[in-house]
Image (tube, rainbow, N blue to C red; front, side, top):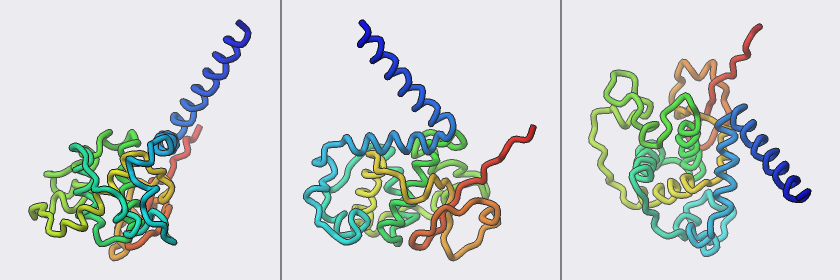
Length: 207
């Protein structure tokens, strides 16, 4: 009986701690949960054991080529499309970073709670779209199938719980070729490939 009570107390404390983490910072809390989920996946799902070892590890085209072709449902298709049009010319690490931002938005209460919802937020409203390719007036045509296949693998790994450790919880990014006004006040968390990554500054409540 004493052992049963002790187990119950331990479970309660752990659950309370996990809830507290998520309530303090929902994005960071969910990132930790994703990392646990990714670690628990059977390696055969993603093929990392059979992928070639490289200096850049998973952030290399050689590693991605060693993985099986990725497939998925609507959410995977939305993320793959976004990575194709937003980051297919990026480094592999940069592609993972862009994927992180999208998943960080899904985890944030400030954005839609689905991948497709995040990507299509504001589409159809003038100057309101969040991802340029969704409102540039051009049809989304996949002209580089090999590049699409590669970012599809990135999308699968990110969705399967790849630890989001590249951008420190960023929910915004822009290419280094532009300097948007909001970037002056947002906190830059990382610079990877052709992009800078940011998160909104934390507001401190005043009594």
